[in-house]
Image 1 (cartoon, one colour):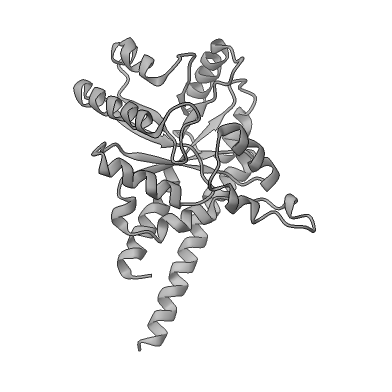
Image 2 (cartoon, helix red, strand yellow):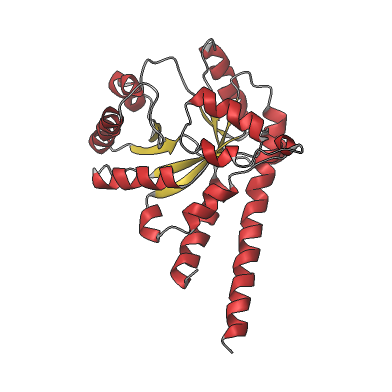
Length: 264
């Protein structure tokens, strides 16, 4: 690593301290959240098919009382319906996150997906409301970097919050990946599934982070934060968030020490 790369790597790692996380709309994970994530954390509430929006409201209220920043989802047909509703401005909301799909959207062409982000960009500029993009998780960094490059080429200019799949067994990650339409980067996950019980070994987003950290700084400049999908549970996700920066710092210090020894 060069000095510039070290700086870029450290900047990305520091963003993990403010990473957001998500919980179920059923609200049963509040104690586990308290045990593993500090108050003030942005907590996204899932809204899956069959969910009742009242559960989202109740869970959002409980999260607010516990000192967290709830981010509820709702039953709109598309994010642009929310944009056109006027409800965001009417309720004094100051920032909005919309979804990005580095490996493609299951129902939209790439061109239409980017057009949707352009519409949100324009709306944010008109309303003076901050808009960023939270990405779907990947198992390699190259789809994320390529997608960010496409955002730049289209002059979309929105900050990017990179979605990370928290520590879980490859079998669990594969199940969620298939449900969420993750495709191309699954080959990285499959390579970690071997014989002799490897299915029981938790896999975290370390490889994705290292790929982002080793990329040129210009390629990761739009990254403004991270969002963790806790498929293996909030305890494992919180442990990874605390442990990865420490391990990265240790490796950087070792590399600096080794370079100093070679150049007395």
